[in-house]
Length: 316
Ligand code: TXA
Ligand code: MG
Image (cartoon, rainbow, N blue to C red; front, top):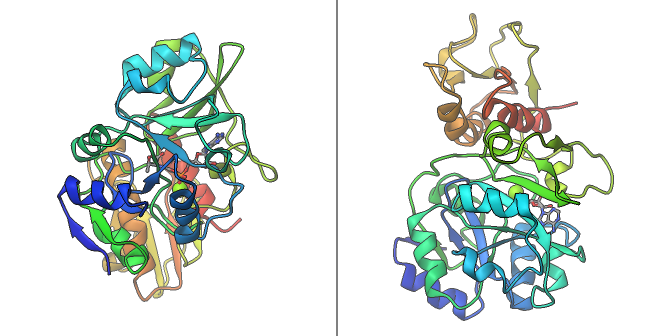
């Protein structure tokens, strides 16, 4: 069973020996390994039960190191990186040969980000290689936002989980790619579209794809609890039933047992809702209920990304 601790030196030793460990980030916990070590990368895919066509994000701690991994940083990418890194933003950039094809699933671009978590930044600074890290959940399940979530699902397969407390943002990073200096968002996430557009102007959003996805976070069934989840139409309240639960924005649904419901943010704060989303979905998934109803969020700020996750988690 994985040891849970706060010692970056222990994590460093395991990583240098080619093992994979759980790491905290501000978005969700990652399952990290040496991105330049094929065995470590293969271990990540095996532990997550992840298909090898689904590429991994490479994490580093400084813009200065980025040049070792990518051949070019288009102007809008540089502006975003300088403004928002460390932060919940992943950029797709043309990779150098140093980055193994296994990491990018053969694509010529590598996904990179500088995560904003003090423990993980300290860990990255202490290493002489970058970390490949997908979210630390079994493929297709809800991403972990605490060390305990990681231990619950992957604890018997990894030696160590670095505990950095609950994730401050709670949604995976926003993924942005560039073509001729034009930016496209491939995954809505912890950095709101408005924040991106404020720096580089209007961007296109291309997050839906059923086959051959550019970013498999785009697969329509993803991030799902085991119980069927039904996304309610805006403003509607579902028929109450004994064995139904609900994930609601500000107020309980009438007629449902209150212990079968979770309120994402009583004050209507979408950042708070994002932070609670995955932990509450896990909690509802563990209750003796047969179905989870979810109320959609307003389409603004992180509401877009929350609605995206609820849609993908829902039966459709
Ligand atoms: O917030 C996050 O991004 C977290 C933390 C741990 O950093 N990581 C994360 O990784 O969510 P993962 O593997 O669960 O999701 C990464 C997404 C996948 O959907 C993958 O397909 C996409 O990034 N991706 C990775 N490399 C890519 C590439 N070269 N081109 C297009 N999409 C890529
Ligand atoms: Mg994931």
